[in-house]
Length: 621
Ligand SMILES: Cc1cc2nc3c(=O)[nH]c(=O)nc-3n(C[C@H](O)[C@H](O)[C@H](O)COP(=O)(O)OP(=O)(O)OC[C@H]3O[C@@H](n4cnc5c(N)ncnc54)[C@H](O)[C@@H]3O)c2cc1C
Image (tube, rainbow, N blue to C red; front, side, top):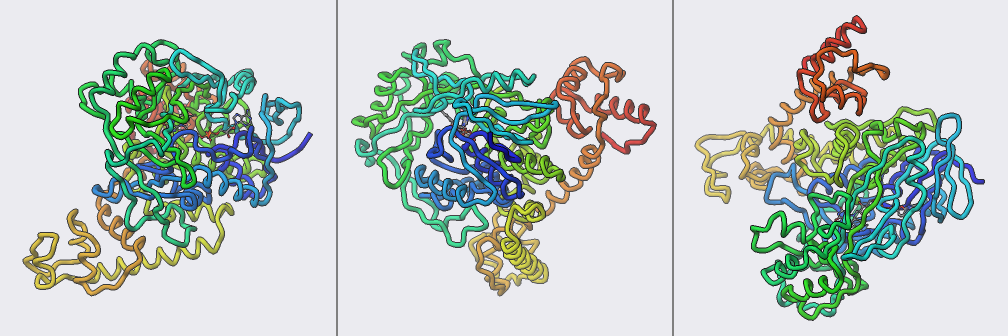
């Protein structure tokens, strides 16, 4: 038997961050995973980031996590998505070399103090004195710890589907995790079933790229990590194509052979990452769907056919692929498949990601009903850190919706739950103008530094950047632009009188570089320019959001007694009463976000709490 403070189960994107955060917090940590060579494996897309997801990567990085640094190191093409829109919704995305990502990940974990790695399949969670006590492996070994973080991804009772063929799998080529889901359910935790899918991989030597459009990386790529010292380099090209009539006919003619439409799959799939057959059925009116052919690495010809996920039989997959322009002679080297797996209903968790039912048991990643590497990583970091805090008697970290996308994601999961794989979007964050990828360091690094998750040197170097931003802003506030210097420029705006530089910068069509040359201000550091421009452009909206945050904060600070009996709260709607009983929100703020709980219910609740506790809650719902 081996003894640790914290056990992490699963070396995927959640488990990696959980292990690093716990170990950095100074507690003895072990990461147990079924295959040490596959830690950090990208089960699906060979890419990190994207719209909203890129912001999460920046947050993970600001909190001392690994994903941003690994993506910079293994990235082979970098693009800032949504660049034609406001900076608030830009999202960095890197195409990554999968193998290199895994090996960088392993190197990092092997060189982290307080962290041990162990290869094995965990079969059950053990408890004692009403809390977790350890885990047992299939091979018979046992491990003891005061806190456990479960991060098993799509492996729990995983079943793969290709047409009518079903086979046990955790993901392609790997066995499922059997027994562990039942062991957790035996502790009183409820589980559900979800599904996701992945497209075929193509041999790049059999592709006619002349029939596709090349998609290059950005000329000046942005790194994800605040620790990356040099600009990342683009080393690969992606390819864009569209489906057309012939492909659609093949799919629609064979729809009933798909595992999804033939009734083999019962789990609910990701609405926002649907299979190609799902896209045709749900968006049939479109004359074509865009697909991307993306390299899986620099030392392989394997290409990922993004947008073409399916659970149709293999012979149909071959016909579908060959019907695409440029893929007429293409060879599939890995088939597309769908996978069904168990997840645990996330409403059974606190915002620390600790189970409400079994003290000391934390959960993160796909097993909480999310989809995506980034969504898994940020949960892993929070769960790992809080598991460590639990064992050392420290203050838990709870991130609010106003501090981060990570806070939004966790609050959505624990308050609303999810019945389909949850993916992050900018639209899920009501304070998205504040939660930008350019200011993740200012939002989160002070928190990370206080808990020893980042080096003091890094914080100091960021403080120097924040100071540069402050000074540039000051200079802009003191500058007034002469019409004679400005008029006739590329913005098309003609000034009638001297105008303040800040006032001008607030206009959507004006960029900071347009102003600096006219105002005679020297500053070339890209992140300083982007940060100041974003701060100035969104200032007015952000002030309004801050007022709203202040109001919500009062609701968040109003705790609902753990033992409240909702049957005795008079005046609640029946539906709201049922939801409140099921979710048992910890604060009024959380109660107000439960779907179906109305502002009137919140007023009723405030009156009840005030009467019960003879106290004034000073909250205006
Ligand atoms: C077929 C497929 C399609 C997908 N499609 C998409 C998509 O389109 N978009 C998207 O964003 N995401 C997709 N994903 C999901 C993406 O892979 C996950 O969201 C992400 O990897 C989740 O991270 P995680 O850490 O929770 O789990 P994973 O990355 O899956 O890691 C789980 C880890 O746990 C280990 N493990 C499992 N059980 C045990 C056990 N009992 N004992 C010890 N170790 C164990 C595994 O070896 C693995 O290392 C897909 C995944 C699959 C498999």
